[in-house]
Image (tube, rainbow, N blue to C red; front, side, top):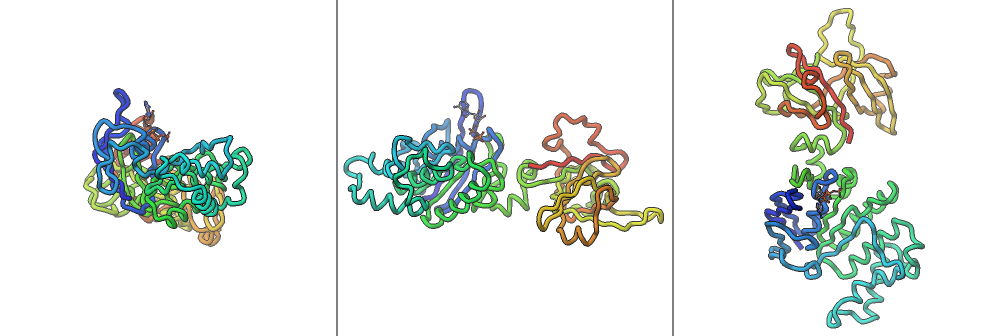
Length: 386
Ligand SMILES: Nc1ncnc2c1ncn2[C@@H]1O[C@H](COP(=O)(O)OP(=O)(O)OP(=O)(O)O)[C@@H](O)[C@H]1O
């Protein structure tokens, strides 16, 4: 079943939680609503489910206006962060519940219920737990029961609100893969809320990045990661270094580094904010400063090295501004360069994204004079790790 959110606005008193939002989700897609706390993710999910009214706009399911339909009549299954299983019921009874409370006409026979429940328990790999009570299960197992319960009524749409939020990292990881598999197997349309970017990047077909009740970007994981539409998305998804620079004639100058502006940025003579991913940083050594070479790179000292499998993470301190830059290079390259803490290196950017100068996220309290330029060389860099 396809979902269309059309011009939805939702206010709580004077506060606007969702503002004139539009979103189309085709049948069979797995979509993540990703955003910081308070960005309106849960509100939007609840509006789609019919658990929350709207001030204006429509929800269309399969092209039909469903705005006035009750949650029961929308063909939607819902899974919450806190699995809310019935504690006095066994796993079997919990999963059977949705079928038993159907109206007499729609209610399946006991035999049909038994077949269906066992089929679902097999799907969530909990068949041998049918007779247990929720208190005898782990958090991850409870969440799988909750999912089986939501699926029992054969919903066309599955909505999940931070379904794995309360679980530890390893279990979350397992359940993600597993959600993806179940979604594909049942060919339903699923929307899940998360504030965990890794979860969204790993599981979703498309990610809706939300901020303050509005959509910042909709795209595949690859698109939102590699081509963030706004500074907010850059900051929110992945690690990024934020550096200020000066644009002139299609080139940008950042300290001693000068490079072509990667796109048609109309910022002649202006201060700009650049976003550089740690893996887009190149490290070089071996410049001989005594020869007065003009070095087209930012000089920095290595303050910390962290090797994680094939990747070497370096914390670098700029010689000109003292600001930190975080770089990620391959372990092979790191070995090849033979880098050490306190060593002087030269930093270049393979690519960067330039936005007009505005205070980058996380620097709201910073004095403007720290950010702006001295001559043509700009002087601020700040690392954001989200
Ligand atoms: N019933 C309510 N009454 C008043 N304000 C509300 C109500 N429900 C939500 N809000 C406000 O609306 C905004 C969006 O809330 P929502 O729960 O949708 O955000 P969220 O992105 O899901 O956040 P989180 O990740 O913390 O769950 C928040 O500022 C919240 O305080």
